[in-house]
Length: 113
Length: 111
Image (tube, rainbow over all chains, first blue to last red; front, side):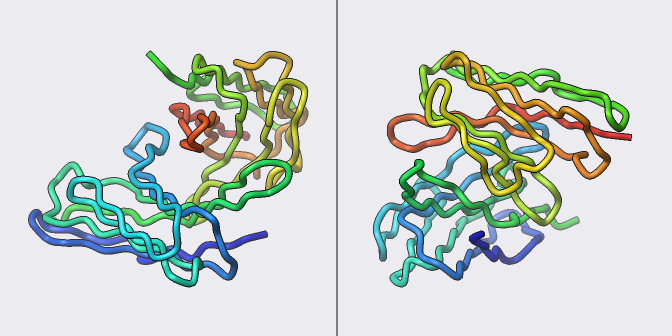
């Protein structure tokens, strides 16, 4: 099946820093989604991207749908402690049996000690 | 409050003992899914359902069954659990705008 490579796998942030993560795929997706998962909870949608080249912001978050439709990145500006968590990218394909989501392996964001 | 609920939240069981994890949503969504989450692998889809009585395999369906007799409920059944099914499981339902709402997760340990 489809595979999404998400990097980095983990990263340490210091309050105020900008952080960036990205996903690449071997195949094309119709939609890219970015989720955040807090400990003990299910993922929550942060940003959805529907068009190649689209750049979308949600507060301090900015995400882009790559021109080739095979990649996406997420930036967090001026990070704060509550940005800690696991971020997942997901690509969505439109299939006859319904839209299918494929998730990346996740980026674990931690606070620098 | 619009939500997806799962029960139980935590379960420790032994190999071969049949179990069911329930999932219910109160948003009248037609599309529901089950995922398992394992470290470094993200979320992988087990089964999904487009509507009542319509289910199909996801990427990792082996060892699992589902049913969709009512729109709001989508239970996940492990007829004979094995240790490699130890994982964190999420149920999700999707709205008309394709936003998926995830349940809180069920952490399953099979000894």
